Amino acid sequence: MRTTTGTALLTDQYELTMLQAALASGAAHRRAVFEVFARRLPGGRRYGVVAGTGRFLDALESFRFEERDIEFLRSRGIVDEPTAEFLAGYRFSGNVYGYREGEAFFPGSPILVVEGTFAEAVLLETVALSILNHDCAIAAAASRMAQAAGDRPLIEMGSRRTHEHAAVAAARAAYLCGFASTSNLMAGLTYGVPTAGTAAHAFTLLHDSEEDAFRAQLESLGLGTTLLIDTYDVAKAVRTAVELAGPDLGAVRIDSGDLAVVAVEVRRLLDELGAKRTRIVVTSDLDEFAIAALAAAPVDAYGVGTALSTGSGHPTASLVYKLVAREDHSGALQPVAKASVGKPSVGGRKWAYRRIGDGVATAEVITREPVETDGRPLLAELVRDGEVVGREPLDAARERHRATLAELPLEAHSLSPGDPAVPTIFK
Image (tube, rainbow, N blue to C red; front, top):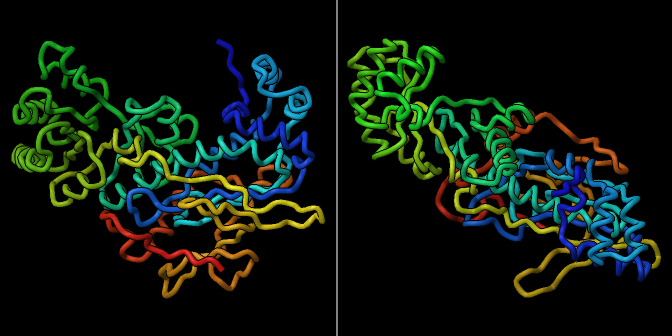
């Protein structure tokens, strides 16, 4: 199997066939503006969360058609020779603006604006959407889970429930939106996300007894480790754990049963045995609703896997990448828009602002001209003349998300389906 190090073939064939036809017609080099936005939020959610912008910028920097890519396209008859020559020299030289990661968005929000020639910009559709749709979906789920958890930390542990590369991106998006750590080591190496993990049931089953397994883990990892106590009998496991570790045992984990009921019993036993500082971590198919239901239980932390890595039932953010303006024969940019039934768009290059009243967001204002009196500007410069200028640390996005949530109206924090918490106004 031959692989490529670039990102240019992370695309759909119709982008290349459009390019070929546009090169032949002479329209390929017209200036164009594309925007990424959602017509609606999935699942009646109250807000979306921007994530993946940093990964998109990384992908853009390596968006090159290598020799083996061109050879593949030629051999399949996908492009003709003039198009192959264009692709061999492809370098994006336009501008990109976007909402910063961690920012909330609403229907119609232009979270990414790509300016360049049609030939340059149309090729970025699939890579932009595949990254942003995935990461924004994970971020929205993670944000809801973090709000449900309150001050209790969340551990992302969904790597085994998704594609190996999606797992890394999911861990990044989850951390951005409030998760404390991830089990995914590649996310730790690549993005600096804190990592965590101890043992599975297999470790207990490997040993001749649960006591032997606990002793081996404590001797290797120390008293601060987390012991998994539901392989056999929970009450017996708690007593064994405290007998071996004493009152300084770091934590125990419950991965099955009625978590709220079992947590109460485990807390009672730990306190009776003098392990009052030992924390209780719960796992087992948790989502934001299950986390919220455990708010009154004596739980200290949550581990979330499947629901997080699949967007808690909504694995895409429903984002689209649409042409909104193109150069006419006079050289001026003219608004263009679809009028399809059920899939309309609003033409023209946009600017976006968030109106704030008494510290609370009241509207998302979308304009065709920059009017900064309409609120806080949301579009930041990310790429200038083909060069990335808007990269930022992940912790900056994490802090932005905290600040963004604080300015959303109260209804935004509801887990029940409803209308977007902030209306979008087109001016």
